[in-house]
Amino acid sequence: MNTLVLTDKAIIRLIKENPNQGMRQLMTQYQDALYPYILTYVYTRQDAQDILQTTFIKAWKSIAKFKQQSTLKTWLYTIARNESLTHLKKNKRYSAQDVTTLLQQEQADGYFDGDSALVQLHAAIYTLPQRQQEVFSMRYFHDMSYGEIAEILHLSTGALKASYHHARKKVEDYIRNSSHTI
Amino acid sequence: MNKKTTYHKSGFKTLESSTADDIQNAVLQHIPEKTIPSSQRWVVWVGGIAASILAIVAIYWTNNPTPYTETDEVYIVEVEDSNFGELSVEDYIYSLEESVEYIADGNEEEFYN
Image (tube, rainbow over all chains, first blue to last red; front, side, top):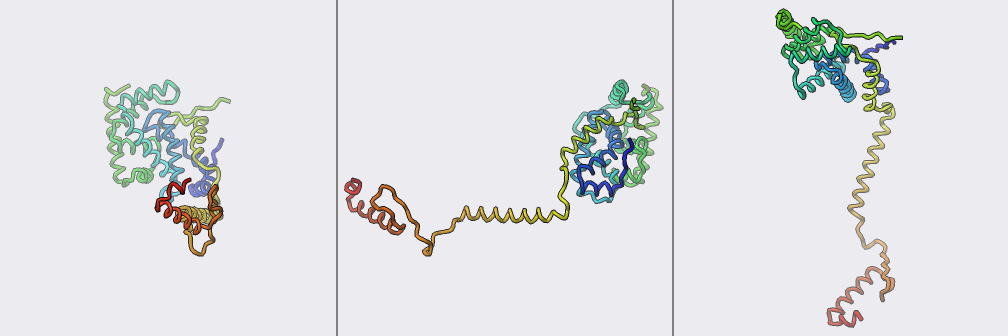
């Protein structure tokens, strides 16, 4: 089934006129992008689904304050990011080994499809400092532009480029290290 | 027809449609069916303000009942089983004062019998 894609303005207008229909449109349009984005923070389906739900509820509660100075996409990613980080603060942080185990488990259940290199890449990303982890993930997995990442993380594009450069080097070093093979 | 399983670039399986529906329905429980059109919002504002004023007046009246004034009509106080019958407030008070004086003069026993 093809999903009707509306512009930000059209979605916001629809939400004002018919909140139910408008929010359904917003969710349908963005859920497929937000879900894997949240997963790259929390790595478990149930947590990611809970955070996705909270993200949309928070979006509804603050949509009246959305001034359209950013796009709906980056605004929603910002909410999802905040919710994911709040979740991570409340819960025990994984180790790279935990991430590997989680992904292998998800793979066995059919919820993760990747070879050992992809599992290793996730584990490598997880060893990075928070900002580098986010920048690398947004660039590599979610194909975001530096401009979009800058809006979400409130950083200059110069700082983001530096972060991405360092992150890529560290990931390469991690993968090159034979002791981290799966 | 079998649904094709799709995976995101990160390797994670994309959101299943049944799960997506559950999430959407859970979110929609927090959202009203319809909002009041902006052209009708003034009705709500005016109604709300009028109701607030009425509530304030009602509370004020409850706490500050209209005091008795000389010009008001005389209250009729019915005193059952008394010797006074129907008296005006002034007469009733006058009678009480007289009774008190009468008792004070040492006629208590006689008064009650």
